[in-house]
Length: 315
Image (tube, rainbow, N blue to C red; front, side, top):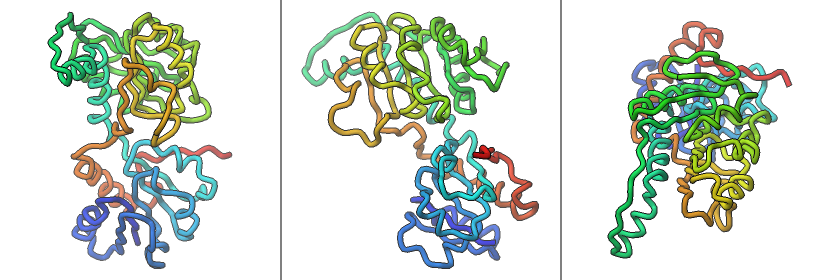
């Protein structure tokens, strides 16, 4: 059994694997550049999904299993070269704490107008105003995966009511109500904050469009930490310009990395972070146990024994 690990911390993962299974052939690299032929013959590939590109996949003729060190695997599902015989697993739950904290940070910074405070600090201007609180407000989460569950726990700890939107789950502990996607307009009309956490796919492209934004409460907030394509940025800019939307916290964008003019850049009530939602100083520590468990299962029972497998469409 041979494993290729591609990651900035690949050597750390490799050291732990070799310590547990000395007989396993483990190759590690920070990037796919100049990999030896032996590494390209590995049957298992491990790495952050966005960096596992088609040009690498098509060179690995013996590949049998890919384990993503991420929850999202959009690019792998869209791959033009990845054989359907290759099993795909993901690190479900790995992003929960850090992404939930980012969503709440953005919400609180927007509600309390943190950019205005920072500007006042820089120009030595003392100004006080009434501060809104999360307690007693409502958050609607679009998409009900493990990250949404982590966010709901933390939002409720701040005294918020949490609702969700999903076609796949009718009841989730801690959510006051679950709406179907067809009820999205009704769901956002009941919320002070809409947080987008739905996976990106053709079905969710611009799922938050002009109509959804118009259905949101006057002065409500939009938080997008899912994928840029889930929100129509032109419609978002129009809603901000009209004053209907109270603000937006964005960590993902239609174009990444962004530079130059963007539809949302002109607005002072937009806080933009550079797609850091999934990053954490505890990432490798949390990802390693998941990887080791999957490797143990694979050694004992093959691909059929793996959990967190990602279903891939027949097309």
